[in-house]
Length: 470
Image (cartoon, rainbow, N blue to C red; front, side, top):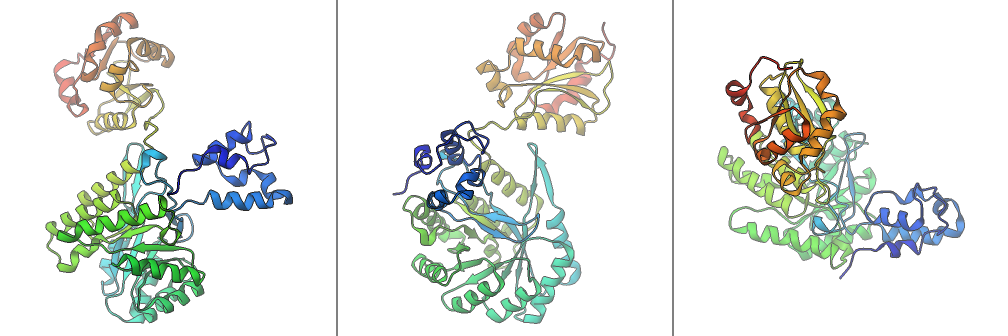
């Protein structure tokens, strides 16, 4: 069973000169940063510039290579990297390259539908907890079985948007037509199977593209992957099949077995990103909301079970938001509370008589309150306390949100010079510190607001006095 590297494992191959060229004080500190993926080996320039370190450099490159190899799809700014993970559970380190979501199209769509679908993927964005959540690319399916038609569809997509592509066909002739149309764009070839792997391998070598390997039998999947690696193809993505209903358990088991084999058993032959195709739900026909719901369930399960990329068919906003929110949650570093900068910000165009609200710098809380105030068009001031990225209730219990911190922040931000009144509205969950906050702030009246910021408009109507107090 493989185990995570320790700093000493890395340190013994570093120059040990503490030259500080890498930006760290010591080689040991640099080794620790390498383990946590907080720096890059290339920053140790003596390793790369001095021939006496050549063997050590080569050893470190191999040692630091993650057990799940990273694979690049596409070119330019919108290209994506899938895989690159080295732990089974994110609390051991964290997950880095989030699950990439590709939306499918096919070569029998009319131009209008194709354009709308591609533009939707290219422009889709949801802002959540300080991050813009986006879709990642287009999966082009050959339905017509016509090479010319497939190539034309690929060309049309690339004219609309420079998005990473997955070219989906088991027919090497059709695949070649698609690759010709997408030359230089480095699409993912989907897929090499037990019957076509030799022709697909030749295309991958000719066009320098990564290849997806498909088989529902793990032994066969492993065998094809080994064969392609021996042929010189080292950027693979593995698809063990995606099934719903009574076979979903077997699907999830296969994904788990592959990930654990790569990381804990050190099985290099399957040390590649995994892909899932929740769109297979639609093989039984489009049943509207029921199919979209089932696809969302499958997609969510696969994100939970180590899928590095998904091909999805439905574009219902509720479905995509569920997948994107889950993805964001899983690929957020569990060791770090998502936080924003503390301080005072304006909501709208506040004046000297505008209300002042208090919140914490936990990103989810902050952006929820900020969005609710903006959507209600409430001109106001938002005072954000540094609670180390912890939410209101927990920060009150843990002492991060306290009367002294609020009083200090009022002084630091010059709030008293920005408003005439001395009224501060705190979250309902912070009611227990209202009395001591009044004492610490010296003259500020503390109003206990609602527990949920969506109720702020109603609270203001019932409790806020428009007249300013000196």
